[in-house]
Image (cartoon, rainbow over the protein chains, first blue to last red):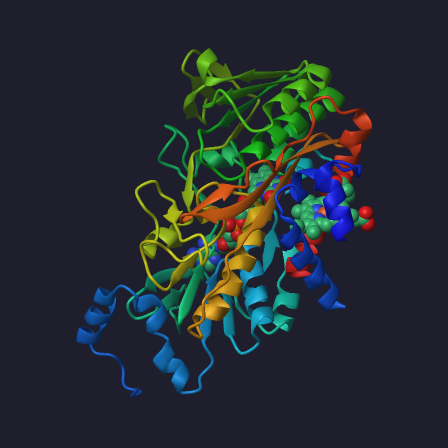
Length: 41
Length: 425
Ligand SMILES: Cc1cc2nc3c(=O)[nH]c(=O)nc-3n(C[C@H](O)[C@H](O)[C@H](O)COP(=O)(O)OP(=O)(O)OC[C@H]3O[C@@H](n4cnc5c(N)ncnc54)[C@H](O)[C@@H]3O)c2cc1C
Ligand code: HEM
């Protein structure tokens, strides 16, 4: 998920909205989101 | 701490200390009672808040006050108006919210006593609270556009609250003879979900083009510019020669209506309408005003972290009713800020500090059933104000292929299903 978000942010992953969304989050925030999702399982 | 009720004098001193809101509930909790949170309004903001409060902390005693047993959602109601969607797809019940441990009371809140911390309901019941969350949505102003009152809305629907008004506009369009003119009137900012008014214009034009090819649509607008304008105008140019948009600078400002004569007047002209859709200026739902949370603009200023009213401590305001910097009046944002507020309130009632929030808003619009685009914003509080994160967000590309538009139309549907099942499912 961290890799996907970073790729969206950098424009390397095809997107309709995720590129615009990912640009609003720092590496630390992306890691925190990914950690939260991982803890939900 | 004793269990006696505070005297009037104590009220005055705590209020004077300037921190009455977060300090006052604690003595009640010391007795082991559950903190009582009352949420008024079971729409996108309120229903989300009720559910997420219970999820944030099952110890909270949460009551949701909402007069209607069935909620009618506005997003996608423009598709109902254009005959592209069944109204039943817009309707949601409160069973699952009740099953999640929320006490759902089908009454309207009629008064709020912020000092006594109590809400009065239509049937006379009084509910005490430690924290009150008001999420009554937008109210239509029937004193703003001359000629447009509640009676006029029966002939010239606003359809800006989903339900009977949506179906009324649908039926009028269906019954209209081919060749008739549809007139829409749009207000100045701020109001509930401005992009939805251009989506509606597009989908009415779509309906006319496919079913009433000799008819046309005139859109009288109190604005010169609007969100996603380029995307809408490109779509109109490509698809809808039958749509005429008249901005303020071309005399489009709607100045009055005559429901008996079925005419709509603008700065320059008077239009005879076969069907008229009048979207009047708006304000926060009435209960927000009664609770003393609305300012002179008619909307409610709030703190960006907790959504606590700047005007009435202990009362939080969410959704359309609030003015919170750059936060848009959308269902998406109402749902997002409700989660932020629920997390904050679950901390505040136990005297803890809420974490700084951040959220995303994405509003999809349809120019035709398979032609969608979006606007994204990422929001964070800066110096007590919600601002957009710079360098993020923005609108769909102007030059994208039709495939991109049909994909976004599909994702729009996906968004609606996701948000409504999160809240009501
Ligand atoms: C045509 C149209 C299309 C839209 N499309 C979109 C879209 O695609 N995406 C998007 O994000 N947003 C969209 N919106 C905007 C969205 O509908 C609103 O922003 C959203 O509903 C706001 O949520 P809310 O909870 O503040 O108000 P609401 O959802 O309106 O809920 C308010 C609730 O409070 C209740 N209430 C009011 N007063 C009282 C009282 N005194 N006591 C108890 N209950 C009370 C009402 O009955 C209602 O159930 C659209 C709006 C319209 C009109
Ligand atoms: C910070 C919050 C979010 C995170 C962490 C996130 C994460 C992701 C991830 C990891 C993917 C890739 C899925 C895959 O390829 O299997 C994805 C795709 C996608 N997400 Fe999000 N998402 C977020 C918010 C949103 C929002 C608010 C929307 C809008 C409604 C959205 C809509 C989409 C869409 C449409 C895709 C497909 C790619 C595209 O077309 O852009 N996401 N998201």
